[in-house]
Length: 189
Image (cartoon, rainbow, N blue to C red; front, side, top):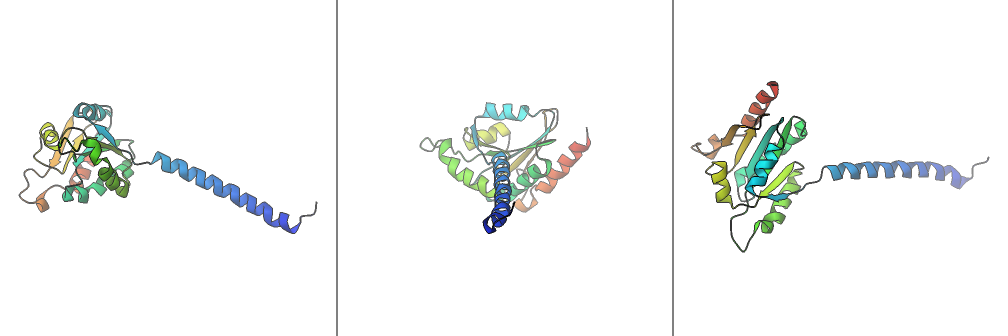
C-alpha cells in the first residue's frame, strides 16, 4: 500500500490526538479527585467526622478568613495533607467565620471561605462551623484562633496548640510544633 502525503501526516497526527485526549482525560480525573469542597457542619457533626477517622492521627485547624495569623499558618496544614495524603494522618480545616448574625447565616460566608480554600488548593476535609464563632471557641475550650487540635489513633485529643497563653503572637505555636508532635505520634504504632 502506498501512503499519500495526507496519510503520512494524518496517521501521526491521529496518534498524537489520541495521546492528547488520554492525557487530558487522566488529568481531568486527577483534578476531580483533588477538588476543593466545603461542608457546613454543626458541632455534633464535627465531632462525628473527627471520630470517623479513629485509627489515624487527626489534625484539625480552627481558623477564619478574618484572622491574619490563621491565614498565614493555613498553607502548612495543606502541606501536611499533601505529605501524608490521608493515609496515616487526616487533616481537617474548621472555619469559624460564622459570627452568629441572623441576617448572615453560615451559608453567607461560603463564598469568602471557598475563595480562600481554592487559593490554598485545600483539597482536605474543609468544614464551616454552623455554630457561631464564640460558641465554637467555648466548645473547643479556646479563647481565640488560630488553634490546631491533634487527635491520636485512639480518637482522643493529644494536644491543642493555641496562642491563648502566649504573651505575643510571635511567641505562639507554629506548624513546626504541630509537625513535631505528628512525627512523634507516627513513630508510636
